[in-house]
Length: 597
Image 1 (cartoon, helix red, strand yellow):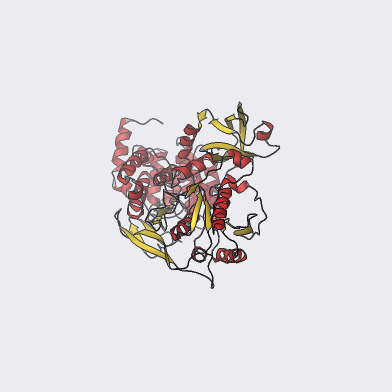
Image 2 (spheres, one colour):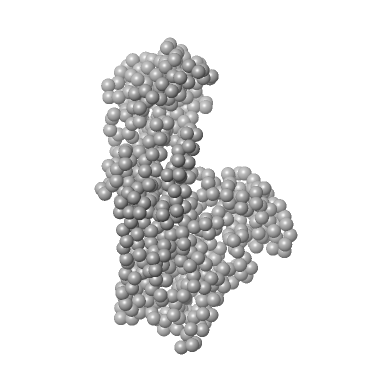
């Protein structure tokens, strides 16, 4: 269908009209919205099917509907004008007919109209409404019922900041919100303005990360003009939130399916800042192609590693530090669309270069960044619990491995059992390698087992106003905990780049006590503290970091991470031989300290 200069003029006129300004309504589902482009075409076609569709739409708008006349027009359209309409317009006619019958209680007749709508080719995204109409009665359409209150719309929680038609809350957001499937041009702008304002007033780390938010907003405003669908809009917001470079700021109820699959049973991880194949499962395509653990990845699909990582940047959620992002990106280096081929240039362990092509068949699941060390077998026997495992190391030192903080007080209970069993050891290795976080409930009790006095463990900054510098400072102190004894012997704390979130917090607390020697590599550095939730008018929920946490010397952990006292970074050779140089270093240092006494 060609668009004349006259039609373009009518489009511009329509966009500025009262009718267009009224287009934005309220609601959570059923959000069929006719585009202003299509509306402008209707205005110039007096007796056409498009004109009849526009008239029917106006008769169905608002509380005082003329459903009888509207239905007659729509029947005339589908019976007489069906060959003159483009597919989306004809699909709208069938959907409106179903809507009229649903509101009149004629469920079977309504379903028949929705089935007709689904038979039309090239009618997306209107057909999504027909699909929903088949699942349950369609009695609310936003652009028709904009003045009606939508049923089951949850009220904003208490303690909220209202911005336009959305709100920001420190409480947990509603869990049943569904993102709107159709957004008009005006609605996209309204939701964009809301999320930009919400982040501007709520996010705590602009100065810490030197983020020029007005510049970011301007850049994305220019991109908004190119957005054509609701899904495109949500992906734009995904990228916008990624500009915060904050692991704890994310889209709560929408995840773009940008990377879906990888080669079967082929794992990749980072050593010496390079990507290596760390495991190949037998009897897979990769194994038959001769791929071996220890092979360095040089190119993927014709791109060198640096180029491939930059390509992945727009597909992966942000990380709070570049080192953590590189670790995550390397794990997804071979990802792509399911069924597609990935071509990999490898440097074999013996130095030879080989190209292999593998099919992407295995679905990917973001799992918090588990590192290569999780695949190592402990060289000594452990007493295993759900979260906290322990043993007496062959050197005589105590060893406690906190595998996860994905529990609450029960983690402290398990830790108490471990520390009691190891009470008489001359020194203790506390291992939080590859622990990517969880909850902090148990940490005051665990840290308290090492304290003899009330101790400053962190300094927290929490947003308390709309300005970027409006932050409240709070000092956090821990007390000695549990029983009549504390563990006062030397302690080594093992960390690496996967150590993040609640585990970054634990490392911060332990370092601040002055009771540990930290060994390994700098942690992830994702410790933004409390979160706020922005609930957009379209139903999208975005988590926004509302604070950040510093150690006892006022050094922010967000971005910076917990830096080790002794840096030890395992090589691919160490991994393939089953060696853990950080553990070995901890044993050597503690043994020296305890023998000196």
